[in-house]
Amino acid sequence: MTTPPEVVDTLAAIGRTAAPARPNARYLTIGAAIAVGVLLPLVATNFVIFQLTMVLIYGLAILGLNLLTGFNGQFSLGHSAFYGIGAYTAAVLMDKWDIAYYWTLPSSGALCFVVGFLFGLPALRLQGLYLALASFALAAALPQILKFPPLEWLTGGVQGIVLIKPDAPGGLPLNPDQWLYYFTLAVLLVMFAGAANLVNSRTGRAMMAIRDHPIAAAAMGINSALYKTLTFGVSAFYTGVAGALGAIAVQFVAPDSFSIFLSISFLVGLVIGGVASIPGSIIGGLFVLYVPNIAEKVSTGLAGAIYGCILLLVIFVMPAGAAGLARLAMTRLAGWRRPTDSSAGTQGKAF
Image (cartoon, rainbow, N blue to C red; front, side, top):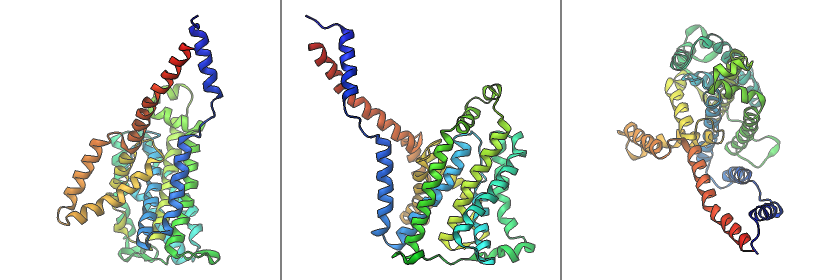
């Protein structure tokens, strides 16, 4: 006697329900990445630890740009300005007023939020390439403002400001490089979790609705002007905190360190890591830090050409960035697992 198809489908559904639930692969991957990040400083040299710290800092800055461009659809070439404002805020507070380094992070972020919000107000009339050009002007102007003679008493002019790397508190058995890495990692995890919650919230859905269908979003009652300016402020906040961490890690700030090339590097890291991908920002930070150094090691005279070739190759291999490649790999892996499900269905029919 042949079992009716409806019964087979029901039995298969019951079997799938009764099977033990497998842990979410996404959370396992995140946990494994955090575990590796915690253990790395224990086996790496101080210079490698410093490089890894800068990767985390660049990843945080790229995340700020990702919130603006990837999730809200606004283009910016001026995030080096927010990074520089955050760095100089931390440096001035530590050097002139002897503020503890950890208090400089919220101060830098708050100042950058205000600057980003105020910049976003007139930028509401601009879209696409015109907004990118306006932000480009901001990035081009900041180094000259920092060199302005009446401000030299505060910014140090072309000489910049030298800082001292903080020691580990409470007698922890960590050198300054290890402590700063763990401190940066903790800040990164908190801010990445905040970004994930923001994107998955009602506010995040409104941001993405403005990005995808601005007219439909306005018809649904979403205040596009408010959300755009707030997103610009939050994006600047993230990048400003990254700038403060960068100043503490490098122990030096100077106007020429925040040129337009830094903004372009952030944009490159955004594309390489994956637009609208929060974990991809770390991959972008790895690319921004290591690939130029690799190109220079191959040939000092042709470093720019080698960097361009590597960039073209990566874009050709990963047109949707590292996040797109990961999604493609997961889709292929899921496709390979489907024959197992079909074979289970065949056994059910035989039954």
